[in-house]
Image (tube, rainbow, N blue to C red; front, side):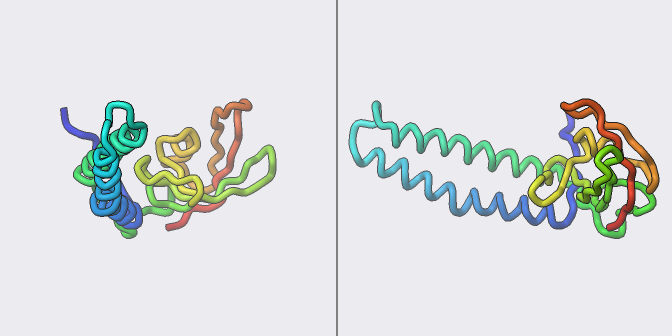
Length: 158
């Protein structure tokens, strides 16, 4: 079974590479030191510090493996590849919430880059799925917990 290709913007690729480097160079050493200290204190069979450090170590190693897999399967999407006549990965989109008469802007990214604080939503999210491939002026309906939200695409840019 082949692994799923992950499409990343240049910024998203850089962030994942930086996170991987941080986990490999900083977090691994920190948790190894915590484990070493816990062992030096003696009986580790009932040491909560030792157990916490081992759990953190497992998390760190899992995250490193996940990041390496993502980067191994990454395909970079360049600015020149991004079209603005329809919504696609890498586009910045302004949507008008038709009911609330309020605009909201965000960038469509692959799930590996999703970051709501930075207004980056996944192409696999309900809103992302609804607007991918649509042009300015298109109206879409998205099922949300409160029912159905209706949006109009106001603008699309790189």
